[in-house]
Amino acid sequence: MTQVIDSFQYGDVRERKIGHIEGIAPGAEFHRRVQVKRNSLHSDTMRGISKLVDDDGSYIADAIVLHGGYQDDHDDWDTIRYTGASPDADKYEVKGVPRLRRSQSWDYADNAALKRSYERGHPVRVIRGWKGDSRYSPVDCYRYDGLYLVTDIRTAVAQSPAPDGTPIKICQFDLKRLPEDRQDPTALEGQITDLLERRDAAPEEGPEHEGIADEPDEQVDREEEPAQQEKFPETRLTRVQRLIRDNAVIRNVKRLHGGECQVCGLRLLGPNGKPYSEGAHIRPLGKPHRGPDVEPNVLCLCPNCHVGLDIGAFVIEDDWSIVVRAGAFGVNVRPKLKRRPQHKIHLDYVRYHREWWLSR
Image (spheres, rainbow, N blue to C red):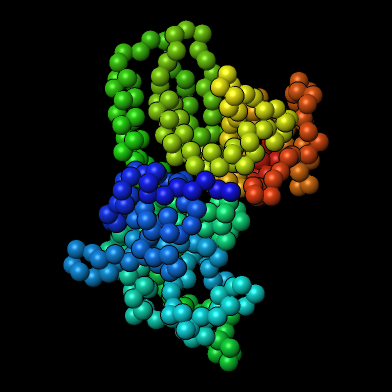
């Protein structure tokens, strides 16, 4: 069961607004739509498009939900193609997929609001549910995935006609995820950032770690310990921000596996009896990989196997077999990756990792 996150953990219900909601970072997960609404991320528990009154009194859209939408929708993480809204009377389902009886209208309040956000350049929050694209969907919950900008709109013809065979016209929106530096830190992140910036402003001694600060999310995202006094370069700041941003996704995966390494089976316990494990991205987050920060792209690993994944010491086949590529790698590697039904690892990321390393 996914851990429930609601307003009591974050404080009182917040005022809705355009952009981020104070105290809720991208990656935060919510058990059901009622918690999403309670935390002011979305105005409704059923509709896909959330509306908010702008300064001039007109309605604009502040959020959308991706949760098993129309067949014309397409989610590619950084970019989204989104079908507009229709009254309930205009919708029906075929094998669980929504279809339309008649064409959509730009005058319908929800579509007009999202169109107005496009015209005014307002970003919208994107919340993904577990019924969305399997490459990016969370595990049995809803997840706030940050801010996106509507970059284009059009009237398009739906793939499926009306029941009487006539073409259906839909309101179609293109969205693009804002860069990471536009995914504003929460107040807590801001406090840590200020603290570390003050620390980094102090004079430092010794050599810097070249290349790490510019590309903190590369395949190997750990800096080696220097022989001299420990340094606190920009990498330390980046790692703290990633820890907070990824916390919900990583925590969920580690909880599903009870802290047990999926590759070797090791379950490290601290003096307090709590397990220690690490969340490892199969397709790394940074350039040039551009992997998404989602559960299907994360493994629960021990520190050794995390390093092994990062340096290509082993790869995973489509049948989940583990192929060891480094002779010095430990002897306790499982024949196959251990999986759990609640953690749906996507083969796209496994294939990317395997092809990346086998091509080198």
